[in-house]
Image 1 (spheres, rainbow, N blue to C red):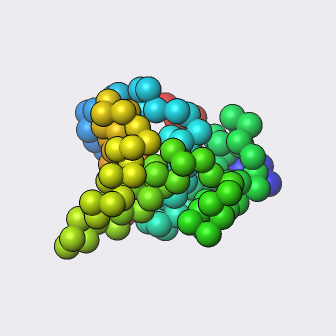
Image 2 (cartoon, one colour):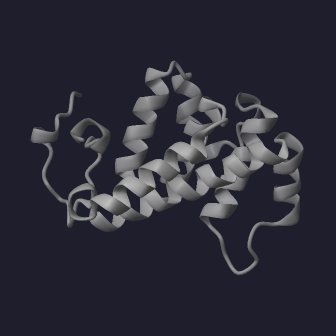
Length: 161
């Protein structure tokens, strides 16, 4: 189904690019910096999984669309929510990134378990791990903005700039 901004119900409580352009530009710059050096497929898996966990239809729609446009396997994308059960579909690095994404996104009293961080550290060098962590933090920030502001699935602010 083709979605245009005009065909979507406007459920937005606010639109950060318009109401707070300085903050929005800073977040975009931080997003770009956090993505540098991250394998694009791992980056999309991080964004998809965090968006699933946070219930962010806006970001999930955007990043599933990006992943499909980049040629990622649709069946694999459909299994992201059950990645720990479908381990054969994901590489060691992808599983380490997804596990870290789950724990950073669901950060609780005990933080990120040592074994989860150790697996991530074994899968990524120090710089890559910092970039992966920053990517996880950024999609969680975007999710929180989109969910709080009720951005509708199918809208993509990158198309509206």
